[in-house]
Length: 283
Length: 283
Image 1 (cartoon, rainbow over the protein chains, first blue to last red):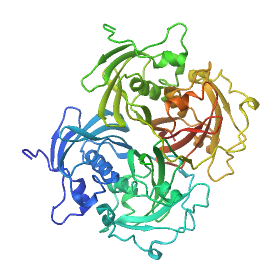
Image 2: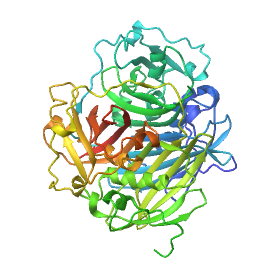
Image 3: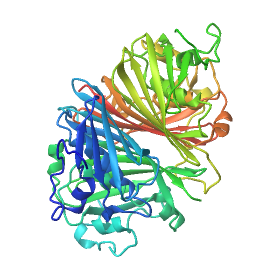
Image 4: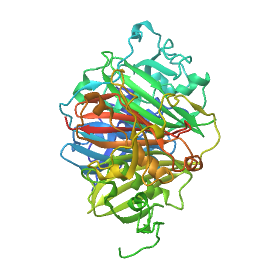
C-alpha cells in the first residue's frame, strides 16, 4: 500500500465485525470514469473451499460502489459473474460509472488479483420514490419462529458458516412437493445491523434445492448471481440485527448447470430482496 | 464506416429477416482484450416508444459475443443493464473477454452512441456436458394449442409487435390467483429458426404481471435483464421456427421498481430459458 488517497475503511482492524473487515477497502484512487481503483487484502473469515463464498465476493464488489461519495441513491440491481477463485491475498477492485441519469446510475466493477480477472459485476442504483405498492408473494404463514429452531453447528468445515447464526427450517419445502424448496432464518454472527452489503451476502447462503432433491451434497459453484433490492436504505436499516427468513427453490438442472432462486424476508414479512443464480454442477 | 476488417453480417440487406438486419454488425476490429470493437446501424423494425424494445438491445449485445470466432461453447447467463434510450442511428459495441477458463468464458459488453453509454452487459459462456438432469417445473397441462389462439393485432402502435406472431393466452393466470401470471405463444414473424439471440429477445416480450393485476397499462422501463439459457445450441436448433410458450409472473412492486420473471418453453415442454428483470415503474 504505497498510497492511501482516502480511507474508506471505517473499521478498527482489532475490534471490527469480521464482515466489515472482509469488505474493507484500504487504498483508493479516483479514476477517470468517476469510479475508483481500490486495493484491499482478503480475510479468511468467510472462506469456502476455494476462496470466499460467492456472497462475500458479491458483497465486496457492491461495497466498492456503496462507499462512493458520488453514488446516486440506493442499489436496485446487482449482477456478479464469478470467473476464478480468489486467493487469500491482496486484491484490486476497479469501479466505473457507465452513466448517471436523473434518477438512475449505472456502474461496472471488476475484481482482480495478479492482473487476472477474478469477478466482474454491474450495479444499477436509483433514487426511489413513492409508487404503487404490491407484494404478489407473501411470507408463508407456517414459518416457525427463530427461537424455536436450533442454529446450524458452527463447527462445520467451511469457515463462512461460523460467521452466521443459520437456522435451517426442515419442516418446510418437502421433497413430496412438485417444486422442492429450502428455508432458513439467518443473521450475521456476531449480530450486525443489516445493510445492502450483508443482505447481498445472505442471498448466497441458501441451500441449493438440488441438495434436497437428490438427498446429497454435490459440488456446485456459482457462475452468475443477481440480486434485486426491494427496499431503500432507510427501510433496510429498520431490520436492524434481526434474523431474516430465506426461501429458495429452482427450476432446472441440465448439462452441467442449474438455476437457483431465493427470497429474503424480514420478520415482519417485508420482501427485502429477490435473487437468482446460475450454478455449475459437478455431476 | 472507414474500415471493415471482417464482415460478420451474413445478411443480404434486401432479403434478410428483419431480426438479422437488426442485430447485424457491420464493421469489426479486434481489440487487445480478445474481444472486438464493432460499428453498426440501428434499424427501426423492433422499435418501442423510445429506442428498440429491451429484448432487441439485449439480442444485439449478445450477438456481439456469438459472432466471435474465439468464443467458448454456448451462452449460459446474460445480464443487460439499460442506461439510456438508443437512437435510430449508428452505434458502437465493444466486447472484452474478462477471462477464459477450461470450460467457461466471461465477457463484458458495452453499447455506445455518440461516446455515451446506452447499455452494459455481461455474458458467461460454457462448454456444456452430461450431468444430472431434472426439471423442477413442468409446462402446465392446460396450455391451449397455438392453432386454437388468435395472433395479437399487429396493427398495434409499437413497431416491434409487428415482428412477432404473438398469441396471448387469456384463459390462464387469472387475477383471482394469489400470484397473477401472463401467458403466450410466440415466434418471429416471418418465421425464423430460434437461436440464442432471438430467444433472448423473446424473453423480453412477456406482458408484465402488473398490467394484468392493475387491469391497465402503466409506463415501465427495464433497467436490468438477466437470461439463463438451459439448452445447448444444438438443442435450441431442434426447436426450429416453431412457437415457444412464455409464462411470466412477478413478486413485488415497491418505490418505483418491480420485478418480472418468466419461463420460455418449447412445444415439447423443454424449458429453454428462464429470465428475470427489474423494471422502473412510472407510478
